[in-house]
Image 1 (cartoon, rainbow, N blue to C red):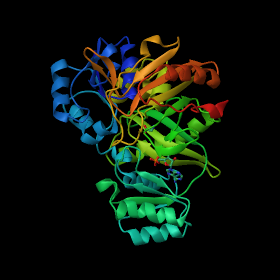
Image 2 (spheres, rainbow, N blue to C red; image 1 turned 90 degrees about the vertical axis):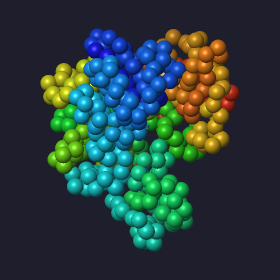
Image 3 (tube, protein in one colour; image 1 turned 30 degrees about the vertical axis):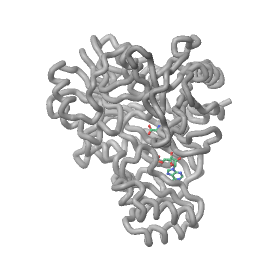
Length: 423
Ligand code: AMP
Ligand code: GLY
């Protein structure tokens, strides 16, 4: 069959790479793709949220499966339109995707389904929001309701910070319409964990757990980013924790969505915190995480396309158990100078070193583009993810870092402390 992966990041490169390996697949397309997906699939010049052209392409090519990468595709209704046209889609419809695109929707769903999550309140006016935060000495997280590319959460530890965060969203409207309604919730503490699970709207199969690194710089400093690295499995996370997440977070969420008519087919991602009070849910995403996908998918030994089809068509209950590589996997993102500052970043830098990678390094491309006559140039904030396996996390980390050092372009930077905690 022919498969289309929608999106253009390193997550999508990892998805394309996994689809190419499937015996079920004769051809893989990526829309719009990047400099890496173009080498192993056919890039199609259609944007990830261009519903009309994606549907015509699916019809023309008689696609057997469409995999949605980014939240922008989910939120544009790409899943709805393709499903209405009769195609199997791995990725939810827009309404089910509100579990990611609206924090208010997600928190209300968690409350109804008794999913453990921080105490919270929803506000559109600054004064009551500030009052609620003040009662908690400003120890709150202030969250824009809508999509904000991973940047819509401000974690506060005193009243001055919570006042400022609330003003930034509700008064200065720094997050535009996304921040016109906010969630203010109690501050939680503990290590974070990402659990991703595949679901057909009824059954839930967890994938290997991962931990990602959201801050731009070493030692968890700097701005929040889409993610600067990840590793799997994370220190201190065993099967019991994953099973608890499936039972107390994933299944209740999937059931609650289904019971309101919003069946979810695809990957549901729970961002969690392991607190003294137990597991708490920080957020849901309606798609693979990036960079989590780059360290989870390589560990998956089972056929990804068979799994995605079972979720897209229904019938996951009959799917065989997933097989996993027991080695550790570490991914280090190499980013453009000034990432995640959209205004300061400059693209079009020639990228060197990709052809001289040490054995065992996988390079998943994100912001890269093939410039005829020049070669590969940078084309985004996160440029590539350098991924490696190891018998221990330390070994995987060392190899992934060797790969990251080898990627050379003007202003390139990466975090050398990804997965260091596990040593
Ligand atoms: P979210 O997009 O909701 O996952 O939030 C982004 C990041 O903000 C999370 O990965 C956490 O590091 C942090 N965060 C979110 N909610 C809380 C909370 N209630 N307490 C402490 N940190 C939080
Ligand atoms: N790594 C976090 C995300 O994909 O949103």
